[in-house]
Length: 262
Image 1: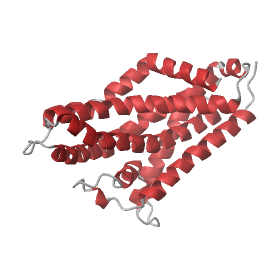
Image 2: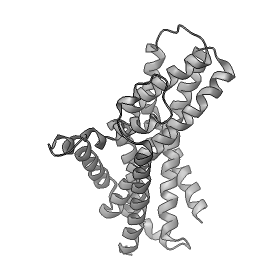
Image 3: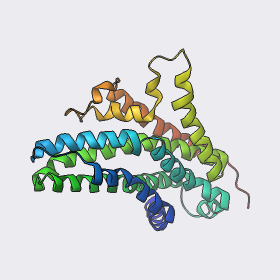
Image 4: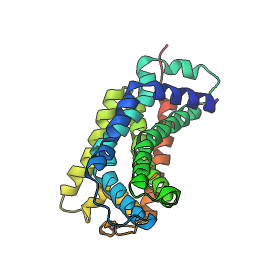
């Protein structure tokens, strides 16, 4: 039953105008690169890999995983359950032979699929464009494909954890707008208010974009400048995985405790 719910939700998301607008927004760094890319002095797969890692990490840290990317994910994930609760259609789901855990995980994985589409397509287009630009052919595509998958995985982990928190708040607050505002308020406080307090060491670690840099440096090592991001990639990955699991568990508990009239 979870597969049916997942497929239905993914199909609904793919048809939605909101997802198309979000996808178009995520293409902005790619368009910028089209017109402002660096002068090429060496046409080789190695030069392509270095340039791809540098550009992808910079755009990821400064745009895709910055406040804009975070807001996109918050809006997307806050709507998955809250819209069902707000409209009362959650009762139709609960009346079917489907567990509440299947509802939570089906909705979450459909949201993760949407994140993969919204961010993955621009990453892939940028990769293909750079392969053509460096005239490196299939060898260049093969060399950079692992980097593409790694960057997409890091993006999904970081922003997926934010999405899981947004889903939790959407069950608590029951309305997409309230859940989005609360999620963004928490993100804003953690990233911009807490670092201003004098008793935190290395306050930059609260910034999700900074954590992207910490995770990327595990593989992106070719003159990317990511050594400036201090931290253990393994510990950061474990933290965000824990956030996802705990958020989903509490989302499920909230769904069990919530009473739906009608």
